[in-house]
Amino acid sequence: MMPQSAKKVLLIGVEPLSLLNFRGHLITSMKQAGHEVLAVSAKASVELQQKLSDANIKHASIPFQRNGLNPIADLKTCWALYCLFRQHKPDVILSYTIKPVIWGGLAARLAGVPFYALVTGLGFAFQGTSLKRRLLTHLVSALYRFSLSRAIKVVFQNKDNAQVFIDRSIVPIGKTEVVNGSGVDISRFAYQAPPTLHDHEMVFLCVARLLGEKGLREFAQASKMVRSRYPNIRCQILGWQDPSPDGISISEVESWQQEGIIDYLGVADDVRPLIALAHVYVLPSYHEGLPRSTVEAMAMGKPIITTTAVGCRETVEEGINGYKVPVAEAAALADKMIWFLEHPEAIEPMGLASRNMAEDKFDVQKITASLLNIMDLS
Image 1 (cartoon, rainbow, N blue to C red):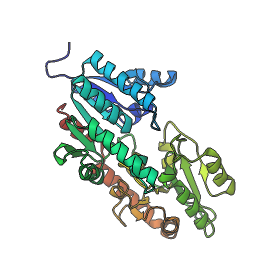
Image 2: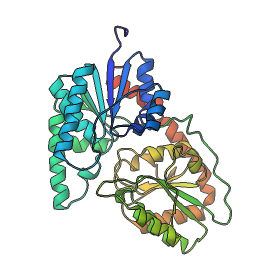
Image 3: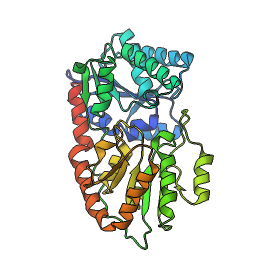
């Protein structure tokens, strides 16, 4: 039997790995507060199922199609969530990312169970001005509006994203809350002094899914520009393929590598050794909720070059821990990369400023405490 104040919580995302990497601390904190937690996602591999079990995370899988709008597949997802809610009768549901929020909100409404949403970014559906993008934005806005109409709170990772939902009448301002991203374990991502630098062999690292709107093409272009003056630099991309319409093919990434302008590192279970070997972290993204990869690099003491885009700009105090450049401007990105090459003495103090900012604003313990308070689970 659970204590009288304990609650049964369902935490819903698409990717099973994200339950460990992005919500592990939240799950642990809920359990430490005496609550029962069931994590829900798409089907996990045998290896990942074992990792979830080793982490003492109870897990259930349902059919999720991460990308695209397939009405039949999405209705199956909604029905599976509804059945899950009726079976487990949770006291609290927290969904994150677009499909768990939309279909989880609708299923929770049908099942009559309390629902919270965590909007981790606006994503592909809210970007661009083409007719197709505008139609997609209107459709997704309508789905959000309906599914969130009974939500208790809708939590965002930056104020700008919250304002978009308010301006589009998706949710009223009184239902919105803002937290500083997903947070970072500042003990696990410990500060490390920058690597010794010889003959401009500076390493610029970007960790991101292979998407055009992560700014990876601009990073490749900037690398080419900078290498014409400083041929010893290394520009690295670490990240996995993404099946979305904006995905960049492996063959395109390999063409950058063959040209000698990008080192593609593939994927890694633990990014810390690769962050440690970098001098400067780069994320030229077009939009973010609040980029976890950047915050991890900040915690490890890396200066940041990012964009003025929503979600990205929150990670940089200009000239203190890094620089912001306009979105989709490779030349501006190259200029800031060159600045670091010409001012290597700035890397360590800017990295320390990043670490201090991570401790102050992005510590996962602080963010988890805020989420538990919002959901009345503390």
